[in-house]
Image (cartoon, rainbow, N blue to C red):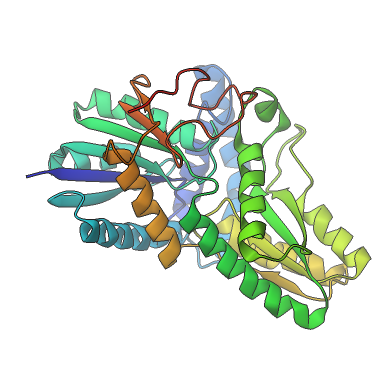
Length: 365
């Protein structure tokens, strides 16, 4: 009897106002986020989380005092489990959540998977575009924790899927509906908004920005609107470092000056949370009104959209079945025995040194 465990990874979010401060501490104590040695990073995380907690609590108060991300991820896991059971990929399928900064955290997920006694484990970040600060951090934590807690099973990793057909189709459908709504106020401009990163991380070879741009181009192509006015932009900038741009708020201000309606598409988030419900909906919505934007339409995240879930199931099937996963990297190190992108081998161009597929090492299954 074959048993398949799929582990989905995401950021997590506070489940109460009391958990905001420890959530922030876990975030800023992550070496993938703050590249300091252990002790100074821990001290900085204590200080920064204490200072930012009141601001963050005020943000979460605006959306009911908690993040909805875990509940929406639960819906995704249930839909994915049903889809995989329908494919007959194993006699028994379990889908588990591992959140990086709040419960259910990686250790809990490892223990659940170990108790499930799988033959094969598929690691599936719910970050379509790979970054060392998101997928990389979650996967590294899983490897360390699984080893420490004695979880032993064939483990295959899906690193990224920026232009996976189901994911792109879901966002294209949602974006097209947003464009149709905004057209009532004139030809709109689509702002593909992704969470930003400090430019120094991209300069070190992180492929995130290039993959975000891949996703945007794929959505526009799938929509079949060649004359669409669109731009990729980045939100959630914090701290003194230079971040990648252009900024989403600057693009909203430009739309106001140009007198065009905007359609904002969160293309790097697959669930709703504070960056969408507060930053995009409330703060940027208010900014658009202040700057005279004729209409402000925010496209929802894909969540459990049928096409997205189908796409995730396709990724799992290609990873677990050798004949479907042709081109996956074999023996990729401690993280996996098989490392797969949406196409099996490397998605990124050679300039992105932090791509988990090391150039020249892609092999046939």
